[in-house]
Image 1 (cartoon, rainbow, N blue to C red):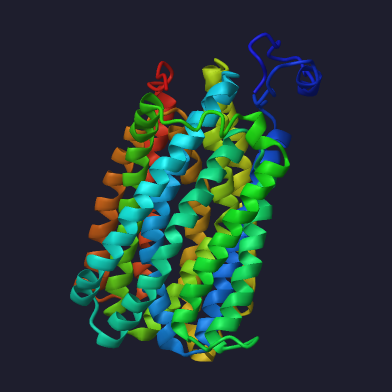
Image 2 (cartoon, one colour):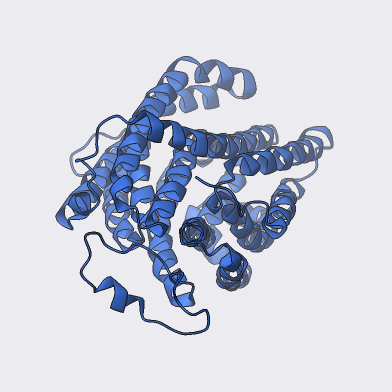
Length: 469
């Protein structure tokens, strides 16, 4: 953002200020399309790389048969529940770091990061214990096919170990995005994804002298790849002097005040993301009741939704950090202007993607090697999902603007309202009326519409302007 002393209508080169002698780097942002893209594009690349990895993983599993591809949908969404707990912590920490960057209080960033790491370790241990001791009973109760249950439990007992590496990895996201250094994100994610693709191929099919582990091979590959990605990104942070610049280890002592602040800011976001994905797991359980093919089709939709939603999620993360940063600079009156700029870019990207997906549906669906019948069944669902991507491109920007204001409890209330409507819809449509999954996937239209309306109203109301974090 422009500094307070800048004339509102006068263009000023921020680099002139950043090049002045200073004890700390200037981490404040400016409102411009160039600044938005500078933050968003590296985030997009960082998100796309693991999505490519995830899709490749499912292509390999598809080679084992439709059942493996179907069960991967259940296990993938289950793991995603815990992954988004880390995303909630990441988003809360990112907003705090961005706010300190906007206030130019660089000394406090290092300790905020260290407290986030401590909290992440505790949450990872809790996630592992829940998976090992509670999840088997839930899966046995909710799924109809016993073989699916055994496959899912065995896979998750291995896969959940990677949660520790994933959470620590997400903390680096908060640090780099919150301090406007998102260009480094791609290095860690590229390392992780290359490792995962190679290890997937090797451990699922038994290549390069390694044992053929089948479905469970994907779990081992993902855990090892997450460790490699974590190791590489912390090497990058150290090599580029970021740890020294932000005093990451100088301020590594326990700080009760900052820990409480992070938990206060992140807890509603953690709950928001968790209930969102739990509702998606509920959706997939209901899909499983419709049969193996519908579950496999829905798993491919999740892949496509995740891959092509990368640009939108990148703009969402950019919205959160830039809104928090400019509020830290005291420019609350320009938040709406910033949102509109980001929204325009997000919408253009999503409409472009929707056109491409609807023009070449066979290209994307044939990659899974499931035959023409599978593709014919999946195309109508793909049409519905492509429209949902456009709706998401608008809704998620306003929702993350709420996050950037520091009003995380409002985020939770919006999510709770939306999820209630969503769950009622999917239960009635899929379980009671037994309608086709094409209509079931219309739940994404319901979800993004319901999350947009209160987010838009809250930002427009200006109730967030006096909030301090």
